[in-house]
Length: 475
Ligand code: GLU
Image (tube, rainbow, N blue to C red; front, side, top):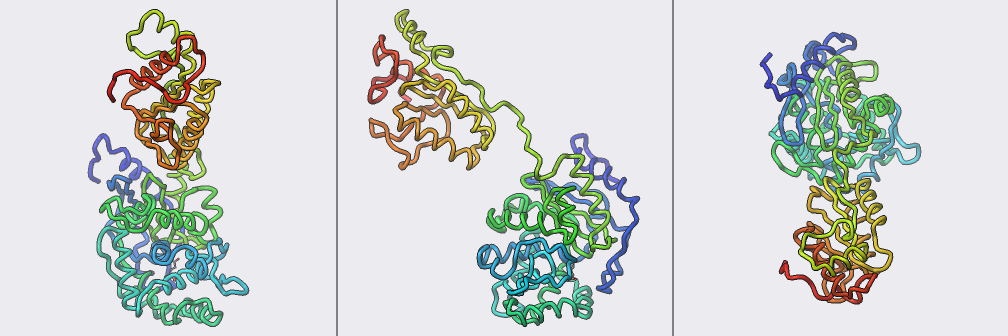
């Protein structure tokens, strides 16, 4: 074992995990595809690829093996990207079947397979791949799988031949669906499905493929956008509900990560925005799921709190400041009289500052606190977002809506930071956008104070029609 550096705690964790799970020697190597039975049951590797494209692993992660059912989510991604969710859903559902991978799980009237993670659904998905013939269709599949892995992949011809020789159940499924009018191609297209299942990968390849889904469709190793983000989300959703065949519900309960297993012993799991993980260990349980893979994922998820339904943690308080110019005036030199006005009427200038990443919870908090310091009559509002590192879409919608409403109610709104008003968010009396952007909170507060002062020293309330004369910061 190569020594790991002091900062590489991830490799340590994987090595530790592997050592503990290695004692598990239950399960049988798949033999219904004769060539798979030749796999060494002791092969055991774990690989993890981070969102920064860094790789961590433990054990034998370079041994090539065939994708088998782990190919299904990626070919599903390919057709979703090509045809869109509505068209694909006409042909294949998104309901957990509660049945084995090779079940005849077809909707009673339409013959539509339950989902794309079971064989029937995957045979349909493969048939949906655009192409003039099976050769072209397969080339697109191979190309797409390679872009997910970040390198050109190839087919293990011995496994393909072995699967084709013994694949009558899958052929039967194809004919049944053809008879029901639910197969968008010829039953002979099932040979392309056999080829896709026989594409050869390593455990590290699989980790990169899973990481690409976890990273919104962008391969973190190559930087290539393999599929659009909504497609990656759709695929992860179906993996979460249907990826583990008849053990899917229990998996979601105990592990809580989108995952997919294959009968050659591969298992992938994606922790969105964190990492892609792959385990390879050939012995399978009665549901056709790799025994050690399941044990690794269960332990990892519990120990590191990876369940999808867990609330995400916050590292720093969102609201840094929620005051008014009375309690937090600017540093601008003021005369005695001016100071008096600011002390008396400074509550007409609300100042809030936020930091970190803003999502729903954070912007709810921010807007709630702004509500607490907001002037009763139309006044001035300074929103300082300078230390905000990211505004997520939900938060941006909330902030824009609130700022637009404040402006419409007559408040003079100033934003420090990167949130420019759109044209449809209204205009101020001076014809500018609904809110003004200035480079610093100090400038913003000083200008609001200036406007407050020029509105008249006896005035308690806010601006008249515009914020009038302003101080000379020239920003
Ligand atoms: N190629 C395999 C089959 O169709 C895939 C099954 C699996 O990996 O679960 O039987």
